[in-house]
Image (cartoon, rainbow, N blue to C red):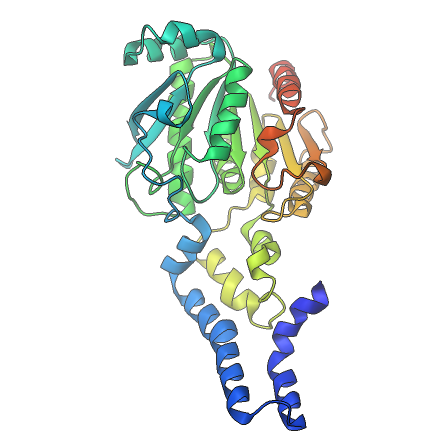
Length: 359
């Protein structure tokens, strides 16, 4: 596979060599070389100097799927016991939020669906509360995310799901790592104040959301604020590693200018998502889940983050754990939510976290 990708770096020389043999005409050679220079030279050059392009590729917030979602009526996409509401952050960014009730409260909620009821449910919660931080593209209504909410709901857990700025029905605002981390930190602090220690609070990050959640929790840890536990589903170690391993980068990564044109701009623009650094500052237990057949964030990056986390936490396997999901199950990047053992894994880790003493 590696030798195939290396061809991208030597294609022009191969074409010239073939031209010398007379197999292709000069005009064909010229078209081929111009096409090569556009794809492997001009496009990466534009990418290097365009912060807007870099953000679009990273966040994919322009991918609205499912389209035309009525966030006010989540029951139209198969959810029960949900309140839609909005929070205004410290930066005056409106954030769209769903509060999803545990299974045991669904019958009760069918008769009392006002905001006061939902507020009282959180204030008096005793069952675990899960705050979900999604990955790039789509919004809180994406189908695989809804499947996971239902797993939590069936476990009789409370769920809070929200969209970062410029996603879903949240306000359009400057989209950056600092921005989405600030949004996430605000929502988590709001939730912790609302629950006020009456119930354990867990954060679940998926894909890009693992970078967001790790950074947000590291910031809160510096303020001596800690949730009960953190789940990282399909995580990567840092954006440089993810860029190098992403399938779309494979044709470019062996070019001599790959790092300068593609990776370096992200770091210069503070789009780093360095979970392998932030995880060392997180005090609560962490569970990493990764499917071996993940072709978006390769399994090797989840394993790399796990090993780094163990190193930073002195090999404390009570605090840092990892669950590998066999490739034969075919869950890939999005569908660990369908893993039959997932509810048991979650319940077991939740119980362990509640016994864990954060130092």
